[in-house]
Amino acid sequence: MRTGIRLGVDVGSVRVGLAASDPGGILATPVQTLERDLESGTDQGAIEAEVLERDVLEVVVGLPRSLSGGEGPAAAGARSYASTLAARISPVPVRLVDERLTTIDAHRQLRDSGLPGRAQRAVVDQAAAVLILQAALDAEKSSGRPPGELVAGRKPRASRTKAGGSKR
Image (cartoon, rainbow, N blue to C red; front, top):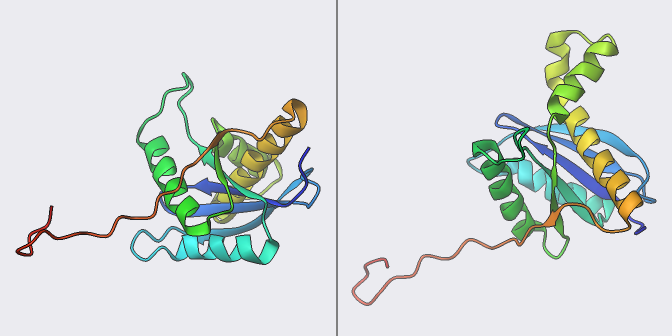
């Protein structure tokens, strides 16, 4: 098994949860919850800072699939987020891993621990990120291969203009 810190990311429409592994890649622990920032990307900037500060081996982003394994709008959003993040933190790899039911499991664990419903909102994304990352760590440990699928990050293309100033 590879050694090195992994960062787990649970992408939500309002918040993004982060978790990190120990350097041995054994145990995932919560890091923080970020407000999702669609306009200026400060959430991705904070993830980039964590990657640099912790000298992360790779980032694991949850891919929310349906129970049947299909992908809907939430999965498309996670793929887009992961692709943008991959371009931002390159050459650190970003991988997508199946995260079916992790948010439901996170809510259940928080409720079972006695945390009231309102208080759960602030930490459920971190708890889901822990579950995503721990599943990825366990999958790698059992298979000997990196988990999920590698994301090919692409930098946004600069807009080019034809002669005469019109956009293509």
